[in-house]
Length: 378
Image (cartoon, rainbow, N blue to C red; front, side, top):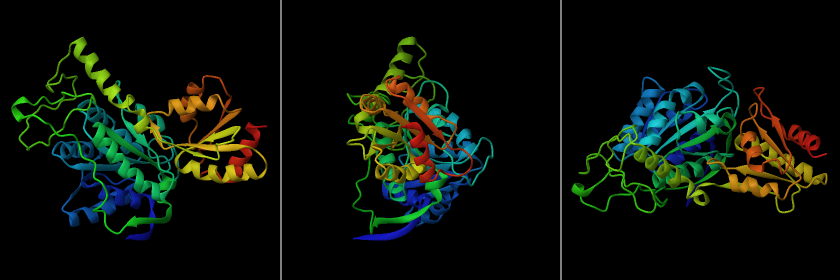
């Protein structure tokens, strides 16, 4: 049985969170993500969960880190300056390998900017916003149904790899409404579970790993005691500042992600089978690109769309493969040019790359994207 609803993207994220088993939200309202907090404030108490509005975005991150350590699946949601405030504790979650999901509904400009206008200006911040060498995952939906699906996937990846996952939305997707078909009950949806220790509490080492390189993570209060720190640590969990310990911890956290790129990195291809040209677009910007590709095809231009769903880690292999098959790549994003830098790096000059940047408070129309295609591919 299923039900058909008309939902905002932000509301679909809430449904995905509940279906994934989220029972704790700590956050602070901020446009254009506030609907996530509002809906979870209403729904979580009915499910035995907890909603807490913290005094700011820094405290919100601290709250969800604590709840995750206690064994809960957790979420926070924010935008703009709130995402900036969360960065220090995102780094802590990376260092301590704490699974959690952060929803960032992007908006225009630094500081308070244009809170109700669409943008994709936080792409590089999602990857590099916190300090030091660190690795995490970021996913970007392009429709309301995908908001639900990618929220489920965010928790599957977060729990599997013990890593923060950023659901990198934009105002277009967060606030638009579309039809979505959801299960009548979420009871049959498989639940992602974090790895549990297979040893006694006396023999437990907090960051000991097997071939997966992902440590087991028992909940605090379950009988397993361990130390949690943002400092470089060894497998006991206690700080260790030697070169060997630093190298081992850094390499393991890198390899647990990058050894599994085929599992983590997802890209959608549209009309790419015989394409001579490609447009690369993601999130809300990709919606106009789909229609523009159809219009271009009707005029005899063999172009397809490459839509990264996993924004980070970057789809390196997929972009390199494009370089050997295409005459030109157009990157369209709602910022002054961020993801295009990664595309250029990956194709390494083997194919021309052109940017169509839109950052004037409005998304591009299909006709505008088509016009840019014609200029780039002439």
